[in-house]
Structures are given as structure tokens and as C-alpha cells.
Length: 354
Image (cartoon, rainbow, N blue to C red; front, side, top):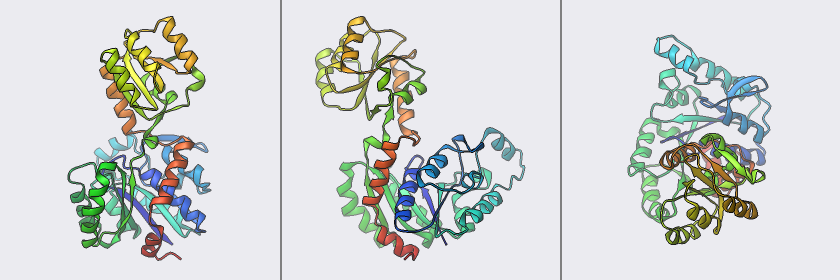
């Protein structure tokens, strides 16, 4: 049995979707697969048991039958944090190892979705480094190449984990960086005995959010075209310019939501004349009947929110950077991306899987 531990150099690097993609491919290649999430931070219920919401989705997609208590054995709550600060020995590491032992039975590979390599979970005695050593796990390190020092982070991960790293995956890489990474970075990493399993380009679709999710997060009221709430928004535009500039700007961006003041009817009309998925009107101001009629004709939901435009923009940025997986369309896209771009032959060689 092999344990494959997925860690990263930064938060929200795509560990869950990577675990899903790896799990689906391993299963399709005939391996018996288990999955665990080391530290849950988004609680939900599964069969009446509190588990991490990401773990619940992975189990559903991979059709896993293991106990929810073992799949997501540790949930980080305020009570748990308070107990840790008080010095109480929570023995969460032992709880996790015990759950891993149960999951491992009759499995070929157990995928552990871990934490950021640089200390996350240490307060609870669940650092990635310690758990990797306890489980004698093989490791994949994710990085998104967004920081200037991303190569330094990968080298530090290599210093920390050594030969336990079977490879790295660069995820969410922006297209302008691809040539530089392929010509400069990958050969350098290879010279340091760091295998690259894949370079996955950033896909805005995977960072998209449904209009329904936006309304829930922003506390917004959808006043028309509610039947389109499950449409996905990939990009956001702020309408704070003149009409001529707005039209030119909006025409360049597809699958977008336009954020603008509820009193800017001119901008709202301009947005509706282009490929717009949703209008988000700020300041708790409602549009006039002409705007509503045009939106209904073009099936573009209008959302009214209380907050001002700047606050809404900041909140949307937070939502997009921390979006959880749930939408089946995004799951299918992500798992296909992993299947197409990860070098599974090299991975299997490193894991000695046949």
C-alpha cells in the first residue's frame, strides 16, 4: 500500500481538485483508492457526522465507502483551537494515524489531502512534515508560480522533505509564464533532483462561481431571471467609467458579472448590450423598469446588494480566491485537466505501482 500525500507551498493551490483528478485516474487504471483530508476547515455533515465539505465532495465523486469519521478525522473549530492554546494534549495526530490505518485496509493507494508544507496545522500537532514522516508517505508538492520566490519555496520543500517528494505539480500557471517555466525553471529543478509531474495552466472556468453562490455570499437579492442562478461567472468587471469606455471594455470580456452602482443606468444598459452573465447593483438601489425589461429579454439576472461598490469588489475577490468545489461542471473539467496534463507514467514509476 502506498500513501500519496498532497501538500503545497501556498493556500488555495488546488489540492482538492488535484486529489480528485489523481483519484479518478488511479481508479480507472484499476487501483483500489482511499482518500483522507488531514485537517478539515469547512465543516458540513455526511451521514450525520461532521466532516470537511471538500472531503464530502471527493468521497461522492470517487464513490468511496469508507467511514466519514476516518475520511475527515480532524475538523478545526474554535473550540479545538482554544483547547490547543490552553495546552491540552488533543492527540489529534494519533487520531489521524489511526484513521489512516483504517482507510488503508485493502487499498493500493491512499491519497491524503494535506496542508501547506510551511507549518499549517502545527498548533494542533498536525504539521505536514510530521504526518508525512509518521505515515512514511510519498509526496506531491503543488505550487502556483504566482510568487516571485516560488522556486525558493520549492527548494525549501525539497530541503524539508528530501527524497519523499516524488514530484511537483505547478497549478494555475498564467500563460505568459509558461515559456519561462519550461525553458528555465523545469531544467533547473531537474538539476536539483526535483521531478515535475505536470504544469497546469490557469483555467478561469475552474475559478468561476455561480450566481446563486454570489448572492448567498454577498447577501444579495436577485430581482429577475432567477432561473439563471446556476450560470457560472468567470470574470468580474467594475462599471465606473463613461458609457463609451464601458462599452469598449465590456465587449472584450466574456462570461462576466458587472458590478456597478444601482444609480448608473447608463452603465447597466451598456453591460446588457454585451456578453454579461449577471448585473450586480450596489448601494441597495434598484434599477428602472427599462433595465429590468431588457435584462429579462436577454435572460441576465440582476442582483441588488446593500454594500458600496468598493466593498463588493473586495468581497468578490475573497470569494474567488477561496471558492470551494461543488459544481459538477468544474469537477469534470478539473479531473480531465489532471488526467491530460499530469505525467502518470512518471508518477507510477516513482510510486513503484504496476
